[in-house]
Length: 215
Image (cartoon, rainbow, N blue to C red; front, side, top):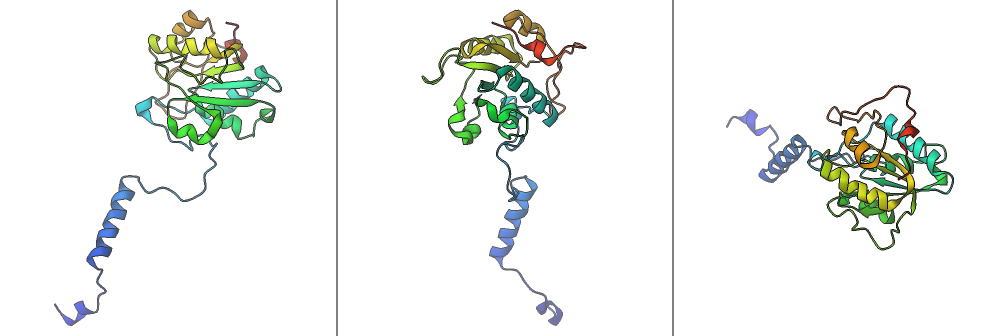
């Protein structure tokens, strides 16, 4: 080693190992931002495609919240069934009338348990396995987005919807013909935040409220 090499600062083996671990975590996307995040912001909980999660765009979530608030009325109760991004947008309090309604989110993903008593664990494979304090026909509006497109999934979600709803239902699904046959609802177009979202049927000049129907 030359005299000039002696002048170059050397890192210890432990420091080098720590740096390598940091760069590995950064490469794998495991280093998380320390900036505070609004727990109700859409996307605060990242999509997990393994659970068929595709969040709505901010514009779509806002439009759906406006609709359920209007249909629920002041003091109304809203159930967001497998639609956490709608629940999140509602809880942000940025949509007029959101402070005049209450809401719960029914979800399989337990990461949403951060919302406390407003989170209800839900597995569509057991459509009526709900807590005892969730009474039948206790919600003025039920907004549901079944996690899968199969007829089996939609049929089971429909059982839950019929149990929860007093009468008004907004169902979002990529299989509108099944929605019509199971619940008699009218399909409409809904965009998601990613290109992997469902492809929805759209009917022109149809107000969003046309998707609501007594069941």
